[in-house]
Image 1 (cartoon, rainbow, N blue to C red):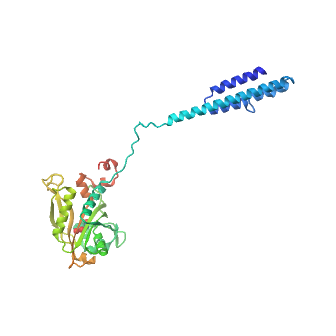
Image 2 (cartoon, rainbow, N blue to C red):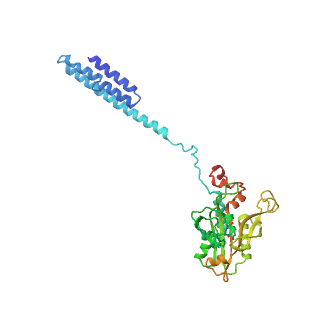
Image 3 (tube, helix red, strand yellow):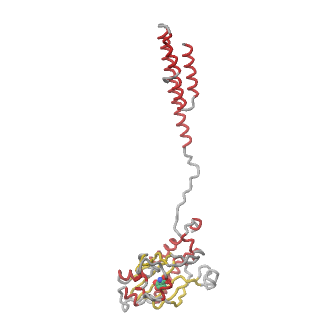
Length: 339
Ligand code: DAH
């Protein structure tokens, strides 16, 4: 029995020292010291020993058990430390490695140009106003001198929410809202979304953006309009930019005009971008119609004003040489990252 106990102690120590994981150690502990383990099995045979032998074997068995427990403890400690060491090596950060690049977003091309336009007008003493995108028929048309049956409505067919509520087809209704709320002098621009029930193609979208302008004061003339818009064009497209004014018709201005700027590609020579014209139309404008001033609570005998409206998408398309309006709304990063 003595030999068996000693052999058991030896093989247990060996196996334990070869164990590679805490699970393995636990399995060995059960194998040797467990209730159904090998040492217990040997001790069960103690009954067949003589009275002198029994305490000697008991002592030996206890010594071997203590020895095995000690080996378990030491080996477990070793394995735990090795595991920590391994983790430390695996998880250490090499500060000389290149980092993971994170992409930072930037402004949409429409916002880039809108912010420039805002800056220019703010610098000229204008304020920024806004109005609702869901608008009354009254403000979108009626107050702008476009009655129910007027053919001018056909050019701005929009989305109706009810008989008299619609998605605004232009930013011009903000003119009336501002006049109702403010006394002259008024100098505002009103940028925002507008809607028309156009089918989508390279130059049409049912949603687009306009920037409205309104100036009302004593002694405002067509000369003021021309001077201010010429200044604006120079600031947006460069000092050598010239403007050209052509007569036009809008219901809410009298007289009305369209304003062109020298083509920023060819500077007036004529090129494919301006279709050989040398000029590109950027906005509609005119002297605010007396009916509109009156509707806004302003006496046309005392005050006069000019107004203008431009399409933001057009400005941006010319500016960045973009040939399809749909690109603005598709959120394709390959497009957006170019600006
Ligand atoms: N609202 C017009 C449109 O959408 C543009 C416009 C023309 C606005 C002349 C004006 C203006 O303020 O005076 O076609």
